[in-house]
Structures are given as structure tokens and as C-alpha cells.
Image (cartoon, rainbow, N blue to C red):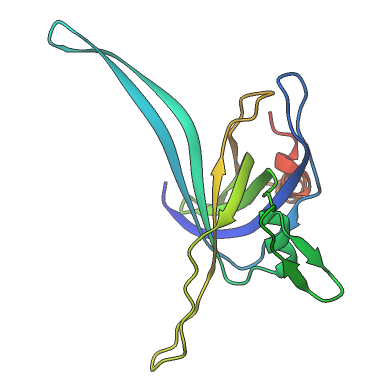
Length: 192
């Protein structure tokens, strides 16, 4: 399906990690304004069974999904929250130490599709981000923008095995605003 837009990028830190018997608990989702690109790269492993001089069966296992974010402006408080750094709201300073550990987070965003009046709402439930390569250039003859980059690895939750949910909505539906508010107000809006 062709896409024509990307917006409403949000994250929510996991405050209580999921176990085999209990669900994860998340903070309220926070905006990450200025999303430019979300690149999703699944990592899979495939095994093949051979017999009679041919492949007779295959089995594929999903290992993790890599997500790279390009954001126009990554606020200091969000950088600290996503990467496990300390943030001082009085001085607007992010302190980075060798013992910082990124928290598990959920990631949500909206994709506009080329189909009439359709939007996809995506949520990835459990992942950690690390800083990606960031290049800063001096001003030259032509105008250029630099973007903030983050790389994440998302895995399946233990409790329910979920990695991602995708909800397709018709924007001409009268319940669209309610659905979007629920989806982005809590992690995934209670999808199951």
C-alpha cells in the first residue's frame, strides 16, 4: 500500500516490565514532534529442511525489528527519557554518564495511505533506543537541514508475544477522533 504522510510520533516509557504472567505498565505517551522518517527493518532467521535433493520445508523466526527515527528537533527532555540520561528541567541540561541505561519504551505513529480516507495507526510495544550517527555541517552555499537520529531495537513482549499492532481507520468515520484519542492517549488504545 502506498503511503503519503507520517505524523503523530509518540513514545511511552515502560515503568513496569512485562513478565510471562503480567502485562507491562507504561507512562502516558509523550509527543516527539517533527518526525521526518521512520524506517522499520525486521530481522528474521530462516531454516530450510532438505530431502530428496530439494527443499521440503522452511521455518522462519522473527528475532527483532530495528527502527530508525529521523526527527527535525529532539527536545533535551525527550533525548534524556529515551536514552536513560538525567535531565534538569531548570537548566535544560542533559547529563550523560557511563552508567546510563535506556529504558524500554513503546512507540506509536500515524501513516497516511494513498487509499481514500485511510490512516494506519502503528504501535510497537517494547524496545530500546541508542543514539545513531549524527552529522553536523557548517552552512555552505546551499541550504541544508540536519536531523536528529535515533536507532531502536524492538522485541516481542513476554506476556502476550506482541511486537506490533496496526489499526486502519477511515477518516470519514464519525468515531475517528475517539479512536485516535484512545490509541495515542494510552499505549495502543487497548487494542488486542
